[in-house]
Amino acid sequence: MKLLISGMSNTGKTSLLNTLEDVLILANDGKNYPFKQPHVNVGVINTAEEFISIVDQSLGKYNEKYNKLPKFLVIDSISKTLLDIEAHYLRTINSFPYGTIGKDISATMNYVQNEVVPEGINIIFVSHAFKDDQDLSLVNAGGSWGKKGGILSEVDEAIYIEIKGKKRLVTMKNHKLARSLVYTGDDTVNVDNFNLNDYVNTLLENQHEAQEWCL
Image (cartoon, rainbow, N blue to C red; front, top):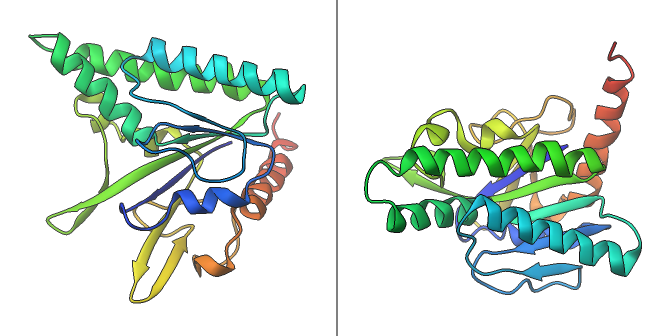
């Protein structure tokens, strides 16, 4: 399973991760991860090769310490990863950099899908969102990869966090940046009533039931 968590910069996306169990957090969002969960603090990721090396090493350290791989791998944040890759090639390639940018981002996503997920690891991407002329979008790299849907097109499930008045709300479906094919609960709940660990395990149970019908 691949899940996307997105929201504006002040909505507390990272705080939802605190309930996750059997998890490894890859924190590259410019600040140290604050919670008592297995994590690796990472600086700038310039290329797909660097991303793959960091994930491999981090999973290796987790396996060495716990004698197993994590149930969940969190990339906090994927939007920072994409922007770092884009910025690197804009600095280093003078002409037509977006072909290389697109290839590197595709290589990053292919590695996650074809190397990490088959190990039984579920992926949770964290992404920033923004409003441009009142249109809500995810922070994304430019070029052809972004035009095909960006990270939202790469995940099975997506939730969106927003602040309305004094409430912080989590939306699971029927929203531009939130969708679920298997969750049957309320569309939106108060964050105080939302446990991410329970939510993702419910998704996994429903997906496992669907897989039993796969021919």
